[in-house]
Length: 342
Ligand code: PEP
Ligand code: MG
Image (cartoon, rainbow, N blue to C red; front, side, top):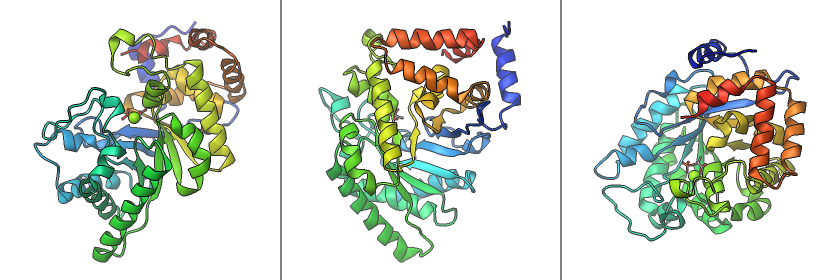
């Protein structure tokens, strides 16, 4: 068997970083990058991806002593957009609250993950929101590769309000620079209400991005950061897999581009299961890119579809996990799981 050391595995997959993420039966998967969580602004070093699927903008707000100015944000965003000149960069608007508190804007709440976070905060502070939107739009005037992603949308009204502010920011920037173009605008699917609302608002957005981290947290009513209940946080819980199937099918029906940007997309088993469910675009941290592409190249779409179909009939998350583990053992992929555990 192919029993390789972790370092051998990673040099093997890294040698093939530039090869396409195409299964043996020729299914091409788009691999995008999650960026922005670290202070490392040099994201140009992340090669082998088709673009940026999630740029988290929180970090520049978290590292400062005050809200960053429009010009500070503009410079930051422009350098990110310029790093991917021919590719799309999906920038998410500020998603603070929850576990991400600003030192200069403390929020005291009993249930922060159910409280003033993401779009709820920015819609209540349109001044802060507009400054960020203007900075993003100005930053894209030359590269024209910006998409805007709205976090924590739970209903149609929030989307309408956010779209109106995007229009306003666009008009303001257009006065200054007529090269500005209206970006693609999408929403995160991470609050379970959106499973039901999505068909009704599909025509209002250009794309969606599924945040499996929060979707799992809210679907299973389990704090994603609480180690006491980490057993309850099952990333392959049947309800999560069913929800992902439903989102995929709705997006297909409405011809809405969809990406998965939660951690599941960069997890070796998760990625293959998602492809089996029909997902064609995965966004992940740089450390998972080479490995995921390699695993995709060793796989058959038909086999992954078969696994996904079986997963959809299993009532226990542990059964889905065992089935995937079994597949990994048969294919001698288990080294990738070990290498992936942090
Ligand atoms: C998610 O919720 O899955 C996601 C990608 O966003 P974040 O982890 O930043 O909440
Ligand atoms: Mg989230």
